[in-house]
Amino acid sequence: MPRVGRRVAWIAAAAIVILFDPRACRAGAQEPDPPGAPAPGIRLAGVLALDAASIDRWPRCDLWIYPVGDPYAFGRPDGDEPGYVVNRGIERRANGTESHQGVDLCNRAAGGSVRAAALGLVVVASTGDGNGYGVHAVVAHRLEDGALAYTVYAHLATGSLGVRPGQVVQPGHVVGRVGRTGRASTDHLHFEVRLAADPERRWERTRPIDPLEFIAGRLPDLRTAAPGP
Image (tube, rainbow, N blue to C red; front, side):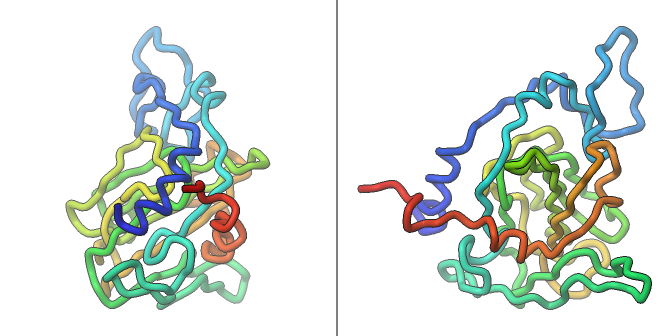
């Protein structure tokens, strides 16, 4: 098994695998519910209808990895794939609002694997432009303290999207491949972490934070967590 696979395997094995009823998870905010259908609990991220029972079964995550390159050491190569650097970070205007709401991660190549950073529920998987995001995915995560966070994976390569709305993904699941769809002039991953106070607020309107700093504080301790021989 490749090195990344071995490292991620113990995390995936320890995670709680929840299978959502596909009737309880429906993408899109415009479609009316059919007559007689039970009212959904919420529109998660403003786009995914989720009933109360599914919300109760949604597991929390406490282990995180980096979405590209070495999953546990940002900047290091992953096997034969070169390490990634930050081409552009979060940028703010004079009034404090963010003009660039994530980090652009690049290793001067296209096609690198983009992996889910933690256990979560896919709320968006789009092949459209998405306001410049291009092919992109958004995953919702319940944190240890019950708070809600989103990870955003944008500018993915055409045809590489490997998730669907309503799908539960484990850390390390391949979301797509590095590309330059949408408003991108080079091949890179645009990666965001957002915190949401209101689970029904559109994900684009939630608060972006430094994603690399966020993950750095939540990486697994491989010295104590790795399984024995």
